[in-house]
Image (tube, rainbow, N blue to C red; front, top):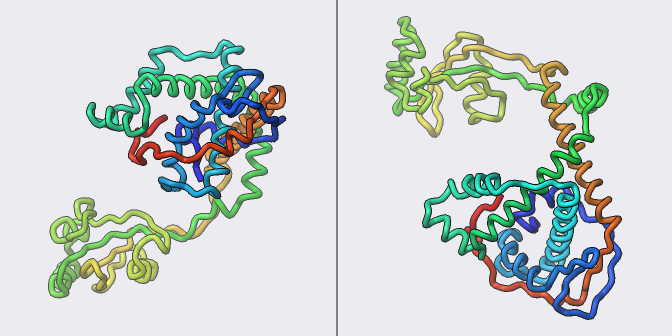
Length: 326
């Protein structure tokens, strides 16, 4: 289940936490956040836009719809709180920043296709700009007021490396090249030329039917299990600079040559330090975002009208081919 596609970036990082809940008498109100009203009409519009993201199901059943609505409501509440926090912190984005992001989105479409995608998403250009401005504002809030608190220490890097050594193991690999021809007789003629001293790469460029022919048949390095089984069976038995006998596969008739071998090994910390640091930084930033939002929610008075939320049904919404929002 992937609720609120537009707000997916935020929702991925921000898990829901318990709130103070109560029911209001107004059927037109889904929730209030410190007195700010989230109307039923607003929620129904957002729900109609986001339902196509629910596992591609155009008409979800009640079992799917209930959790989806709850999760979408949490996302909308969090959005409200984050935008309020951004305003209090004087965090804002310019019209130029919004226009650049919208231009980036529209670049994947023709002019007519972009307008069609907006219509399919039940979204006007003004609404897209508004949503884009909100997302960029939240991202900027995190960048300026959450991420600076996060750092990864050398001790954390070493600890992660030591606890996840299996992730840094490299299997045995071979660097091989191939020549692929259509018939067995063709393969044997190429084989005879190799035995007479012709260079493998030159013959690959001249005769091979594979796309890698322009690179002299070079397949690069690969471990077991990546290539077809027949490739592995031959390549991992050959010594460096050895050429195989003719091998038959569904692709044709092959001749293989092993250019280099790499034994299995464990990558050292110095080789993966940046990779580990970035991974831990991402994890810590996500945790910091979660804690930041939970703190905002803990200070807010949030009231949810559960009766109204339960009464909201799925309506025919946007096509799954709608615009890919930021």
